[in-house]
Amino acid sequence: MPSAEIITIGTELLLGEIVDTNSAYLARKLRDLGVDVFRTSTVGDNALRIADIIRETSQRAAIIITTGGLGPTVDDPTRDAVALAAGVPTEFRPELWEQIVARIRRYGRTPGENQKRQAYIPEGAIAIQNPVGTAPAFIYEQDDHVIISLPGVPREMEYLTENSVIPYLRGRFQLTGVIKTRTLHTSGAAEAAIDERIGDLELLANPTVGLAAHSGIIDVRIAAKGESVEAADALIARVEADIRQRLGELIFGADDETLEHASLALVAKRGWSLAVVESGLAGALIQRLSKVPTQIFLGGESLPFLHEGEPLKETTRIEMDARGATAGLGVALHPGKDQMDFELTLLIPQKEESHHRSFGGHPRYAPEWATNAALDLLRRAASQ
Image (cartoon, rainbow, N blue to C red):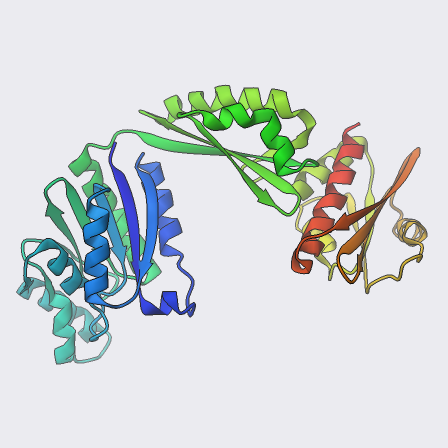
């Protein structure tokens, strides 16, 4: 199975002026082809540096994909850089120039002489027509690897990937396998605690298992290679069953399932209706619950920061009564000098509970952390 690396080109990326979304898109597409992506790199608009990184990458990867630097201006050096890395000159392709001229004229403009640069590609490269833009792409085959250069404009890059690059890679490397992923979402335990339970599975070669932390939610990613979708799914299923047995109720969903969906589904199963009060969260809890298509969430109130000692429980009870709800959830963030504390209260039939917790991370993440803690408290109570 070939491996791939992605090189995004553009000084604007290094200056932080735009965000690289091309790498994520290409990584997903290569994953679906069964191709491992081991590295992504970003380099500015400098032909020598681009050539250097292409030469370096060609020692490791069979598939090198670059995006960006194919425009008509002087600071679009990818064509020259690939030619330099390959040790060949660029050559003018009249058929590419005809396509560029025709497309620009469709915009009601006359192409300038500088746009002829886009009709030059490395000598011997395979040209890829671009019917959705003015920058042709190309593929340069060299020894045991290929260099595929695509435009940086996301929509153009995506179109050419779907319609030209993927079919080429399937044929060139006889790609028949796939890589499938499955993500299990957990709440109520720290990343280290999850690792203690499933650490041995994180050493597997196929499927691979990895953890990612997100403000009180820990994702467990399972990725499997197989000769078919069914084979990959079977590998994932065996490991997933093991993980579910070990983690039990810590798992609240998989893939696109969210904590708010899982919590409200359990509330609905219990026959409750829910009202909430939040303080210091700028509407975060209410917004997330409101996105779930359900009639059992009756809304709530978002308040400014409560002072220590203000009765969150009583405020939540008043909101429940006003909205005719049978369950109430309250969360209040209390900013401090060195850390932020938050308070949780849950009022459900035959039970009331309140908790105070500390958050020592960056204050920016405190609202999301408190919201997830509140939803997890509701989920656990509704599941009992």
